[in-house]
Amino acid sequence: MALSKREIKAELLRMGRDPAYFINNYSKITHPIEGLIPFKLYNFQKDAVKNFQDYRFNIILKARQLGLSTTVAAYVCWLMVFHREKNILVVATKQQTATNLVRKVKAIHKYLPRWVKQVATITVDNRTSFELTNGSQVKAASTSGDAGRSEALSLLVVDEAALIEGMDELWAGLYPTLSTGGMCIALSTPYGVGNWFHKTYIESQEGKNDFYSMKLPWDVHPDRNDAWFAKETRNMSSREIAQELQCNFNASGETVIHPDDLKRLFQIVVEPKYQTGFDRNYWIWEEPQQSIPYIVSADVARGDGTDYSVAHVFRLDTMEQVAEYQGKVTTDMFAPLLYNIGREYNNALTVIENNSLGLAVLNKIEELEYPNIYYSARSTHEYIEASMIDVVDGIAGFTMSMKTRPLVIAKLEEFIRNKVINIRSQRLANELKTFIWKNGKPQGMRGYNDDLVMALCMVCWVRDTALITNKRENEYKKALLGAMSVSKSKLDTRIEGMTGYRPSANEATNYDKDVLSIKGIIKG
Image (cartoon, rainbow, N blue to C red):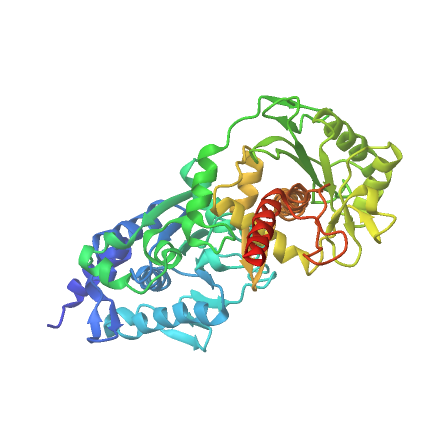
């Protein structure tokens, strides 16, 4: 039905004031099955659009396929049509993903009624951007470090923000472009913890930043129920379900340690009994106990970079963490610290990674005549007794190489999965949470440390392969020696008829009877 000029003016005024009205009544989208259909907002989508209006910064944790990207595209279209000189930038994991959102904006504009499009027609139209006659424009950009740096932005849209590598650095470059009052909409499914999206979302809930947060799990969609969920998740892994549908940060990432085990670890961490040392970074949960065997494992850093020098102390009988150090100290300071820790904990077996910095610490500890240093064979990296280093080509410390690194990490995962080890440190638990698979290799997430994790790996490996194997071999040797005995009796192998043969008492009696019987026969 054709509208009069007065009605058109009234409609344009109403649309300009209310983006949800514009989307609900005049926007069309392409449905994969039904084709071109009116875009009717669900309640959660209406709430999102209202938040775009009410809050300058919005961050949305969402499930997959809720139509949020399309909702954002419709909002962008409204912003461009009814506002002059709006500069909108879309960034995503890939240029193609950002371009897809721009394409949605174009499509919504294309199917607007002619009298709406006349408000602002397209003047520039290419693959990654388009511009209207009122000066408003939208464009897609890659996630390179200089994206959007040279221009003031009215709106920044960050799609699939959790998947953007280096988003911390990107945000540091983009945030100044919003300083003139620009807005930001960041939306994503979760992808583990520790990344920019996770930190920003959590801080927004704690009121530590200016973002307004929304959480939209799978069941906010009115057409989805338990039957739908059961069908959709039939062939999905628990990680995929957490990421795609449940908005679960902890279970969604590709962590080396299973999310269920991480959850359990965070339930058993406790505050240390003492926080001591010159920098108060030496945490103690349990004082040394007599006759208890301990192990100290250390990873050495320079003391002036982003890495830390760390050390763990564990009981070897129960594999409970009793102490930990993490700090930025020089090797000259770290060596006596390790020496004193080892001495305090009953001359604990001290295992130090023998990289270039670790060797300096090892040499210093050897000069101090520490009695229980871990030695390994130079060729095989197997544990050897200190008394054998002159016989076997041995070297002080543990060699972390391309060969041993995956083995010790696998041992750590095995120990945690089987509940063999009990950690107490919040610092260590946090590192395990950001220890992920990246390009097939386990390592700390970008911007996070894994020093405590790798030192823990050495504890597990040494305890299981060096000490337990060594103990087992000693037990085998004792059992073999115990089965051996020395007999002082002599075995007479002479038989009847041989010189020197002497029959036993029974044999002699029978022999006498036989002789008498024979004599009787002869006499007869």
